[in-house]
Amino acid sequence: MLTEKLIMKINAVLDSDLTSYRIAKDLGYASANPIHKLRDGESDIMKLQLATVVEFEKLYEEMMKMENIKSEIKGIITKVEAWEIGLVDADPNYHEIDYIDGASDHYIVHEVEGEELEVFFAEHDHVKELRNEIYEGTKTNEDFEELVINEPADQYDYDKVVAYRSDNGQIEWL
View: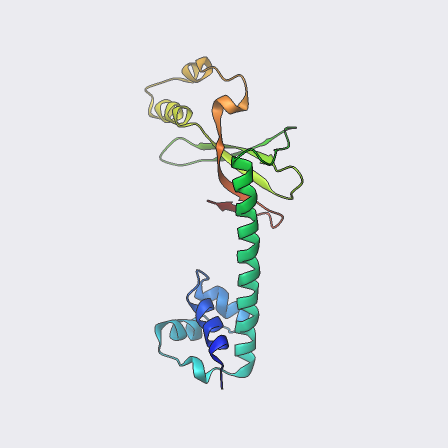
């Protein structure tokens, strides 16, 4: 018989943002159908096999670990935005997202001092607006060159982190 704590963990996994495919894969199912049935209430949690319950519990623990890591990262980001933690100034990276139907988005990427974390800052709104006007043809690249940008802070908003990349290599947008 399942305890209330195990039922809570299974429900937390089922109610999470994880896809049914991801849950099924982690539990060892060949398809996502059993997870869809659990989520839709067509299958009873109380009838799960012990091995499946154990895998659900492992997945729950992994989810909690990831939530703790994300919480720590958000704490670091808050300190970066408050200028309590510095950025590595040497050679920032740049990240660009191209769109078919609009101007591309540009970001500057810095490492956080003492952390295995990179943070992304977006361009100021007036710079983005000028890029859109260039894309639409109402302004030219010469107009962008006339924009006085002496240092990155003139172009990028260092008061708001918009994304981060930790040691897993994936960009997490905020």
